[in-house]
Length: 106
Image (cartoon, rainbow, N blue to C red; front, side, top):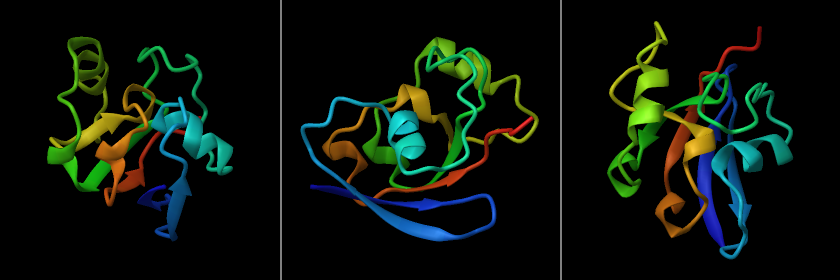
């Protein structure tokens, strides 16, 4: 099992536990756990409504690719630890990370 922590917009924290063999991205997992994420573009890195801040474990994740970086550059609240949840594949790299949901709901 893969375990990681999610902090919602209201600062509520929850540990998520998912099977290792699941073939989803982080955005899909967050939606499955009923977090409010618009995911307007369906995971294509075109809308940034799944913006998360990686508070712990950023170095465990693969580097963001150009399309993701370009979209993050459009966000006024993006920081060096910002990622798009739709671009983070669920695998052992997520073990122990902490993400805070930052995506827009409008």
